[in-house]
Image: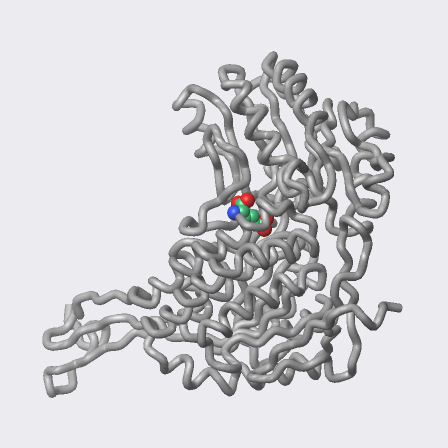
Amino acid sequence: MSDASVNALLNRIGPSSQPALDGRTLDVRDPSTGEVLIRAPRSAEADVARAVEAARGAFRAWSATPAPVRGEVLFRAGARLTERKEEIANVMAREMGKRLEEARGDIQEAIDTAWYAGSEGRRLFGRTAPSELPQKMGFTLRRPIGVVGVITAWNFPVAVPSWKILPALVCGNTVVWKPSEEAPESGHLFAECLWEAGLPAGVLNVVHGTGDEAGAAIVAHPQVPVLTFTGSTAVGRRIYEVAGRNLKHVSLEMGGKNPVIVLPDADVELAVDGILWGAFGTAGQRCTATSRLIAVGAVADRVVARLVERAKALRVGDPLDADVDVGPIVSERQRARIHNYVEVARRGGATVLCGGELPTDPALARGSFYPPTVVDHVKPGSTLAMEEVFGPVLAVIRVADFDEAIRVANEVPYGLSSSVYTRDVNTAMRAVESIEAGITYVNAPTIGAEAHFPFGGVKATGNGHREGGWAPYEFFTELKTVYIDYSGALQRAQIDNRED
Ligand code: UN1
């Protein structure tokens, strides 16, 4: 049982902060120490129903507020996030284990998104086109849809929610958000910046809890016509099924198995820098993390030797310690899952060149740490080559030539991020055309997407939508086409009056 001195988070429904109606809670643990940090409400269907009611109640006034004025609220929220960046970064680093520097980056991504989304209040463009008839015109408007249900993961507890919530709001929708149960306080603090910025009560409601309970209730609620989700492909698939039956709009961001292809002419040091950062930054817990190195020909030996040397030198430990390179894995359960992938690869004949064992250092004993791990001679098609690990494990797959590299890159069910290292522009462009992924970097790591470009993936990574940049404003609005006939007479459309 949890100790009574632990602070409690509350749901925010309309203007009121409240515990779950049935009083249940969830403990949130520090993955570096195992200590309970805070207790969050474990909400159920009844809590979600209230939150949806509050969001519906706020919709009329918010959707009628001019979009540039809605945008101004986001600018103030961006300013508030900037002021509170250090405080939120500290909470995030404790709560989900991201290094402080990376936690600041997570919040910076939300700040950048606030500037972009706020300014979108002055665009939200429609189109005009000439009519086929005289004295008649046509144009389109973007209309808000209603209550948007937002369900997000723990690994970017502020940035990824900002990609969804800020565009949804500037478009005039209201929101019910379930942050991850593994990072609820980071989520709460992000939402607080919006409330402090003057977002009217009920426009953003936060309901904490698990995916199976609060998350499922949001997905199933008949008055939530739009859903946006970041998380596993297995959960995304279930959401899509329920949403499909109910004709809801859904945007899904799911797994990745992101490759870096290193060609024989690559700048090896540059490639090693990029692979290390992509594979072991955020302890490999990004959906964009580099999880496969596809090394072409003889360059493999050089890249792998350098990588292993550098990976061994990375320091694992407390994410608040500025000298640490790799923080903990979010939970013991996740760590066990990661370790199992390494064991399966080992049994399958792959070679673990570094890492691959639970740390024995007593300073790390209380947390769920896992060392940077490089596994060589991973066979195409094997489990470690195909499945998302979501941890600091890099699978090295050796191939003979460019064509084989592309075949291996594309053999996975996912297609989020990817990268190619070569000095030859022709090869780089052939890779850009051939890799099945939503994002391809040339001579840069698979992580580090910028807030003002579309973000998302193909195949089992997504369902055709993009977040970031200009893309989400289409998703969060419905087009209304308006025809104005100023002829003063009945004019039948061409299909109804053409004689030839
Ligand atoms: C994620 O891991 O869910 O591209 C998002 C990146 C970050 C976003 C990652 N800007 O690495």
